[in-house]
Image 1 (tube, rainbow, N blue to C red):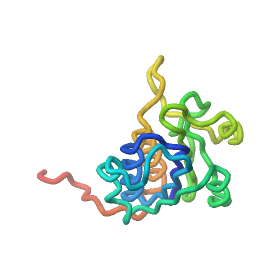
Image 2: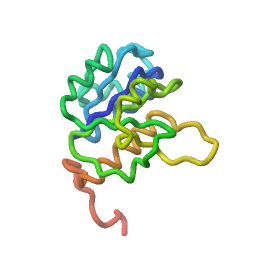
Image 3: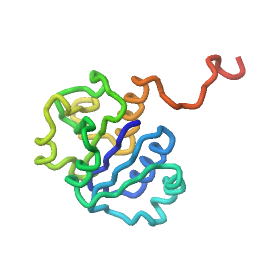
Image 4: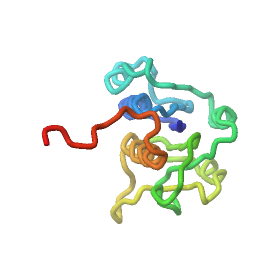
Length: 163
């Protein structure tokens, strides 16, 4: 339903957790090289590679190749300091969300290539730098999925169990 793009991710557990998230939400994961790890790495496997068969994962040589693959998908750059709150945007099936590396964020040239109206941030307390990458992806992915009625999600009973 959605595309999650990790631009030059560096930390295996973050990528593994995002892979697991994608497997559980139906999002397609795009990894843009260079990667700071091997997809066969033990730490990545612990965090989510056991979900590799359940997640749709594509690896791209660079962002240009990823962008071509996405076709006409609307691209949202998720970056601290962006001008719009992620929750104030109406997301549609097929939208793509690009997240920068853990230590550098998104490159200025990539961020500048995304229209300002498609640059979103997650609110944080004053003076804080950023959220963990996997956590930020989860917040945005679930908000987009929520806005679209959690399409294809397993049924959840309306009454809490044990009540």
